Image (cartoon, rainbow, N blue to C red; front, side, top):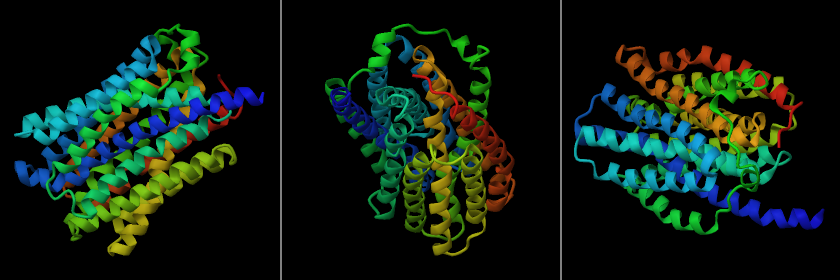
Length: 398
C-alpha cells in the first residue's frame, strides 16, 4: 500500500504543478481585459457597449472551446488537447497586443477565448483523475488556485504601474504560455485512468437517466455563478474609476479581490468534506450576495478593499467548489465531456454577465442596480449546489 501511494505521489505532484502553471496564465488572461480596459478604450475610442463586447467576445470563445476541448479529450487524450489549447491561447494573446483596430482586437480576444475554454476541462480532468476519488476535491482546488493568483498578478501589473501600456499584460499572458508548451510535452503525464479506458461515451450519455439531474443542476449553478464572477472581473475596475477612484486604486481592489479568491479556493475546497450541503451552499451564496451589495454601496477605498476581498473569497471560491464537484458525477469515458459542457454553459453565463451589466449601466441603473440584479440568479445557484453536494456525499465515481 505504501509503495503504491509513494509511486503515485510524484505523478500527482507533477500533474498539479504543471496544471497550476497553466491555470495561472488562464487567470492572468481572464483578468487582463479588465486591467487593460481603460487603456484599450482610450486607444481605440470605445464606448461602454463596445467595451462590453470586448469583455464578452473572449468569453464567447470560451464556450465552443470548452465543448470541443471536453469532447476531444475523451477521444484523443487530455494531454494532447491541453497542450494544443495552451499553444492557441498563447499565440492569440500575443495577437491581442498587436491588434491595430477594433475588429482585429475582437478576433484576437475571440480566439484567445477558444484556447482558454478548451484548456479548463482538461486541467480539471487531468487533476481529478490523477488524484482519485478520495483526494479529488482537494487536488482540483489546489490546481484551480492558480486562476485567482494569475488574476492577482494581472492586477499587480496595473497596481504597480507596470501596465501603463495596455498591451503589457497581453505580452506577458502570451509569451509565458508559449514557453510552457515544451514543458507540458516533456513532463505532463497522460491520465492513467483515461489510458486504461480509451472508450469515449456519446454526448447524449450526459442526459441519460442516471446523470440527467446532476447535469442539468450543474449547468444551472455554473451559469449563474459565472455570470456574477465575470461581471465582477470585467466591469469592476472601470466602475471604480467612474466612481472617482484612480486606476491604480482600482487595480489594488482587483488585486485584493483575487487574493480573496485564492484564499476562498483553498478554504472552501477544504470545507467541502467537512460541512453539510446546506451549510456549504448557504455560506457560499449568502457571502456572495452580501459582498456584491457591499461593493455596490462602499464609498471609501478601505471599504471597497474589504468588500473586494470578501467578494473574491465567496464568488471565485464558490466557482472552484463547482469545478471540484463536476468530475465526481461522471464516469471516466464521459468525464471531460461532462465537465466541458458544464464549463461551456458557465461560459454562456460569463458572456451574459458583462453584456447585461453594460446594458444596465447604459440605461443608468448604476453600480448598485447591477449588483442587486444578480440576486435571483445567486439564490437559484445556491439551491442547485445544495442538491448537488447532498448527492455527492452519497456518490463516489472513480
